[in-house]
Amino acid sequence: MQMFQIRFVWQHLKGKRFVFLLGMFITLLTSAVVIVNPYLEKLLVDDVIRGGKTDWLLPILGMMCLVILLKTSLFMVKVVCMEVSSQHMLMSIRNKIFTNMQYQELRFFDRIRTGDIITRTTGDLEYLRHFVAYISYNAIDIVVTFSSALVMLLFISWKLTLTLLAVTPFIILTTVIYSKKVAPIYRSIREKLSMLNINARENIAGNRVVKAFAREEFEIEKFDQSSKEFKDINLRAAHAWQKIVPIIDFLAQFLSFLTILVGGIFTITGEITLGELTLFTSLTWALSDPMRRVSGMLNDLQRFWAATDKVVEICYDTPLIRNRDNAVHKEERFDGKINFKNVSFGYTEDKLVLDNVSFTIDADSTVGIIGPTGSGKTTIASLIARFYDVTSGAIYLDGVDVRFRTLESIHKAVAIATQDVFLFSDTIAGNISFCDPSMEIEQVYECAELACADGFIRKMPDGYDTIVGERGVGLSGGQRQRIALARAIAAIPSVIILDDTTSAVDMETEKQMQYNLHNLPFHCTTIIIAQRISSVKNADKIIVLENGKVDVGTHEELAARNRYYRDVCELQDEKDLPPFVGTQASEGGEA
Image (cartoon, rainbow, N blue to C red; front, side, top):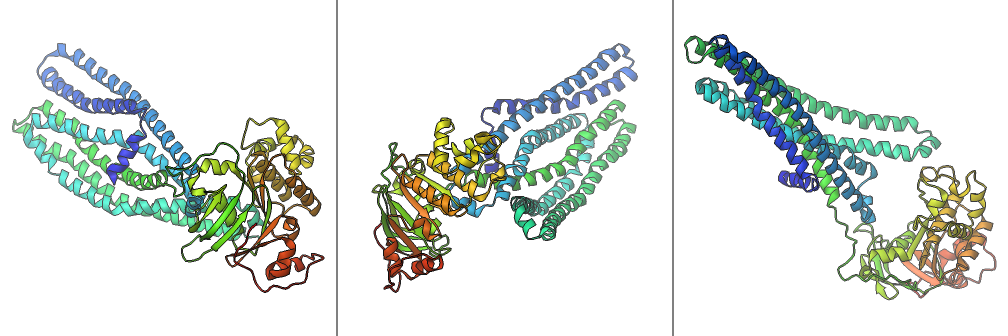
């Protein structure tokens, strides 16, 4: 799995791989020359100070300064290379995640909450960037520095070098134990961070509800609990690390003690020269420093593994609802005829919302859908637009199963305006022309007039150029619904679905909207989902949803035979109802 994660990073370095490899090569070069200055110090002691070759002094000092200058310059180039390549990789993965999310089905967003998605696209991605920009070259630096120093020291005195290496197995054993211990802790850190983001995001989005119910203290306590859990798990990781760091530091520092003790004895006995002891003393850090840094790098690696798992999951999460290989794409307009044939559907396997439902909606007709809360009204809209696929049965659009049409053609043909309106932080004109940003402003005006929105829009300070706040802040519910309806009309759809879109408008405006929808300047099948009888009574046919079944008929027919529909009519003071002669809903019909 870890090799897959590294391949995933390498895949998204495409386009900047040469820059990355150049940075790694520079790292290798600067790490290898770590032995040069200690060797020059050996010559300075043995040949210049003790050997009397004073003419070598300036050339050796010049060489030492040149090496320092070269290392500093190359280090700057290396940092730039690693940053450029890591930022490129970050952009590539972020774009892939966003693109993948755009084509995800609604079940994806039902399953993964917004706060978790934000965590994956920010904090988790930063760990991937850190891997490329820091961990990768650090790993090379550790290996090459240690190896170069080891080769040089073995060449000078293999006995003293092996004495120093006797400490290495203890450091390796300590780091392996630490790595296994902290791996689950870092996975837990990532989950706690996700929950923290989810709590913060939900509180910000629902701030009006919190204030309306005076639940500020409750939300503060809930966030405080998430924050405390995140703090505690980070402290656990820090404590685990601090238990191991002193051990590694002690063992690394012990190398210096061994160098002075054993190296001093070897110098006295003539095994090595004073210059060689100086070289050993200088290069001891090249053995001890990599050992000391290993624990920190393992710490970062554990964060990287945990974060990459989540990023890979969201990158390669394949939607079940996607275009089939033999899907039919239709550029021209649909007629708008819809047929449900023995359709069953449930959001969970154990509970069906629709149970063997069949009905037909003729092209260019107006159909109302009414039913109690949870009966599946919005579900029908989602199935027509193929936001979900049926559990069994089939839905036909112009005689072809929607599963055999391309998603692009379906979504272009079907426009939905919902009760819970989402408006972008853009101008009103920009929101209305969302489907086609190049739309002429006159068309925007026309769509707004059809949605009964032109009047209040022109009264606003900047008219159609008024900036809408996040989620339509500053507009009333009815105003937001009318802008959403104008946006749906602007798409010139073959099927337009109004899901309780007039719930927040007054009766007079609703009547005008209904009249306009009956007289759209293009042929369109209109489906009105509503709770008000007044919204659907003049439809060509009405579909009553109840207990997963449907009953289809006109206003008069349903008022006479359908108990639920009759009760709603009486509750809403509908007049001139026919005598009631029915007992229960039928299981199907034609619209």
